[in-house]
Length: 304
Image (cartoon, rainbow, N blue to C red; front, top):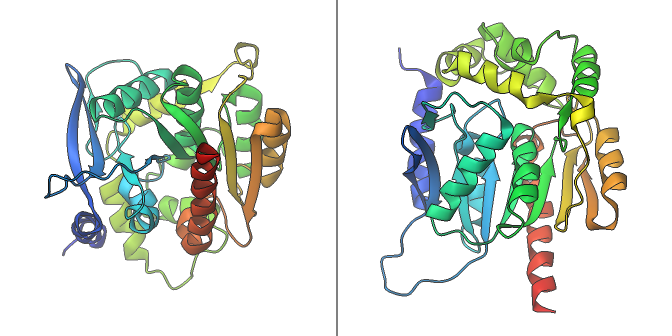
């Protein structure tokens, strides 16, 4: 029997190519290769320079599954780049380093090799943490950020509090389910409302396809947590926009309010009603409206 998720991914890849992006492998260093969805090369000699937007996914899926609705909506006016982080999608490494910094350095190197000189980074969850790190390490590359359901860093105290709230002992128990029922629970928590009519076969097929490199991903989760005393909030020069689901059960809206207050006048919070952690998938039209408004405001600011 055909796996429905595999079939859907195949169809989605075809649609993405029609939308104007194509997959490309980039060697970051010997033994490390990242897959990116990048703007399709124009068939004419005329190259239209568009602002670059980089979408960074979280732990639940690869890049194109996470951001499919945003890609469809933005490719006509922006150069869209969608990476698969290491050990997701088509990206792998033989290096032993699992740190957030290493992921960030590989992503930045890949973007440079693709010719990206300046970009807006849109990050979800784990991808948001990478976005923060990239804004810190490469301020010349990251113009601004849009962050959804994420934090600047996952400290031990915050991690413990959030895991307790989720009724979990470890992030891997939650984010790396070992059964189809575990996948269903993951999506139930990550959404405002999980339609009851979704057949169990979908969760089973998703489990079979989307959770490769389990050992390496567990190591990524362990490396993601840092000691409280090792974290010092960074003073970002970039503008940072938070677009949050008001029913985010993983990182509550209260966390977004605190981050906005902490970051000061350069930060702005917008939230989406009746949306959870995966607001960009649950309410894509509303999410896209916020995102396009933000991107348009950045373009206007540069023209002033």
